[in-house]
Length: 168
Image 1 (tube, rainbow, N blue to C red):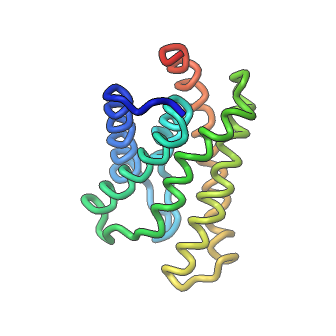
Image 2 (image 1 turned 120 degrees about the horizontal axis):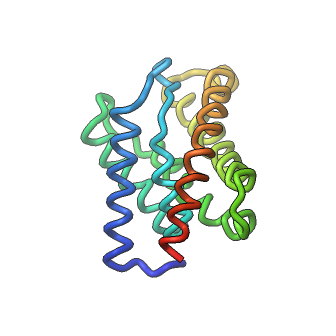
């Protein structure tokens, strides 16, 4: 774990702010439970660059502040869990997959993270919130999440490869 100092806090706040803008203002809603958003990119970068604790905290702040201030529905606490895990999992998987930075290794980290969080846990929580069947919602959300994963992987790879030089 990297030490959380003033520089790390500032970077976490910056990543959280970027995530809020991407998730709340630059989003395309397909249905009330399916959206195209790239708000996870800054959270994943925070996790990879600053560590899993900083990534989890960045995700929590981005979700709580973003949903409380900029969502018509308000903040729904259970949905924060997958966002926090989106910040924790890449930092943990980095130890296994990203000893050498290649686009395929970055895709592996993001795909595993999104299968657990967005496709699995978030879909389950939304099915309970909206009273929709899990499998019914999974059929709608999984293809969109996988398409977003493809774009996220490329963007994270480019930014992580560049920013990793600055942080190490």
